[in-house]
Length: 236
Length: 55
Image (cartoon, rainbow over all chains, first blue to last red):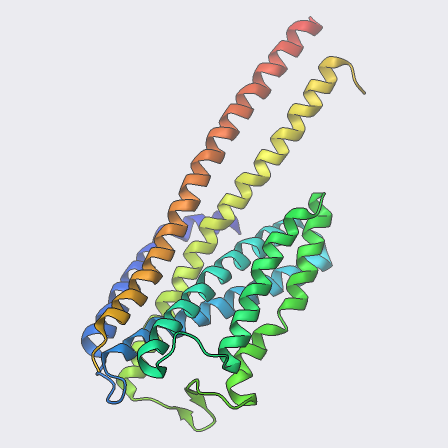
């Protein structure tokens, strides 16, 4: 799997760069200016994809955590760390870009709206899981602990998505049962941005996984060095 | 409503986050690669010394 990922990696980077340039063109040139909010509405085209990648990354981490708990293979632990870290990165982007959009439109940087609050809770939870895993001793125990936290924490993700449907909120609802609440050109721009961000997520995941593999290699070498030192000292 | 500054700030923040993250990974990766090379060298050195002592 890893070798295939690296073989396709230059192609993935090329596709990501092209789709990013394309989506920026669509955002600033093609997409019409929204009548009520004006130019500031263009934050939407990067805000929604950032939130989407946050959900996707936490979803990948959930699957990796479940698979780790079943198979106990450390490769799945590497995937969950990488995915949670990227999920936090994109959720931060969604929170900050949302705040920058809220200031001129809602006249406030932050409001304790259900969508915003659940997103913040989700963000804090995943940041804590990354910090908490550091206090656990032993590779296997640490991975098991993190996997359990990720499985439990994933409950929050659908809750964030459904928050604007379950409770009264000022956050706009875009995807309704009647379809998409926006013009076709805007929808196309959003779709291009979603694709670009998903590809960016794949790129970052491959890069971050490589870092985890190097970390593992260090651990393996440290073990070999200790064994060698013990052998030479005559320690059994 | 124009508010170009907010749009610029949002896009700049997102790009800064992505580039900052890539920079952090690249730095950490080169550090780990150096560490691995040093450890492999130490391991080879240790093995050779072990062979000499056994002979």
